Image (cartoon, rainbow, N blue to C red; front, side, top):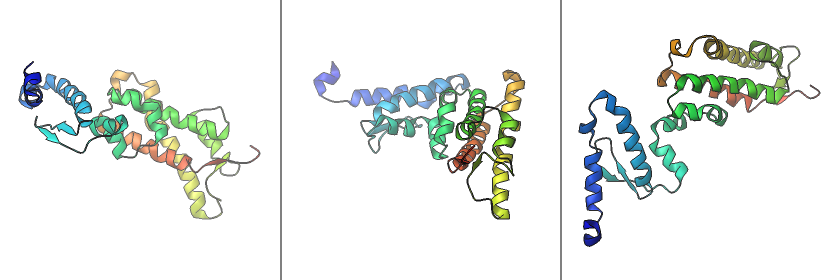
Length: 213
């Protein structure tokens, strides 16, 4: 009613600053709630060219034009993936788990997605080491991304195979055989693993199936 009378949003802005004052969330158990409220509020405010800072102050910012832009700018987890230019094939498999902070499942699903990408390119149906060794067989490969004429090209080709095998040894196999509660993956570790898997996918972007296979 007061807002209607004064034709002003000052009271709303004052309420937001008080409600999201970080002083009220100093307890460690309140941090997740604070981040949730701050991100949710800023998703709406950005479309009006406003933002509540982590100091609890309302400030003018560049107005967001789309919901995708809002997600990139507000969601701190998604922003991490965006800033690292994580490959779309990685985000396709892990984004839901990652944004829910289930880093164990995020990296596990992303690793499985890497094998699935190789199967899609080659038509092979195996998994893990058998899949990569067959797909990247030095004398009879199922795919290629260079001419393999020079020592450097051959080394790069074998390097990609070994990278994928290493990812499975480091991520897929432990996750498949170790109870979730015993395999600790924090956000920093998850981001490093997802970046590594993303790097492999960027190589696969250049891969093609050998004709006749």
